[in-house]
Length: 163
Image: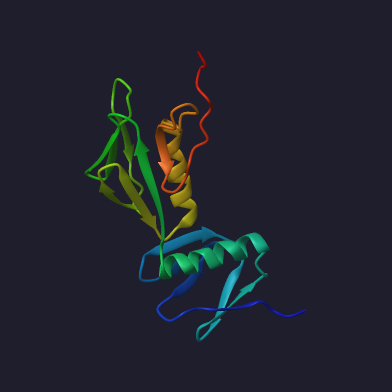
């Protein structure tokens, strides 16, 4: 059996301490739990015991995240739907009686332009979890298609009432 060896790109540092693997690069730092220890020689990394396929995919996602970063674009479709950022908080007006105020995780950055806002982070799992949390507050309506939708997504709308 061959030993799985990972090659780190230039500018990426990897370390493990007390069951946590930390990967740092230009875009930020990603930390995940693992029972494996890291052995390094130059830019080559070996995990002992070997990483399971699940942790191996998390490791490769983390390496790509600290090099390139991940981003998700969301769009607000509907009359009167707005979003703004204020002191590390996102404030949504989604047609409810009170605005929805969410704390923005430290690893996620936001850029807002009118009805489209973009979330970016080196950690893919945190980014996807936060995006689904946002969509939960106003999931796309099945008749009009209004709500929080991914850019490029076309919500399937039902046919209206026939008269």
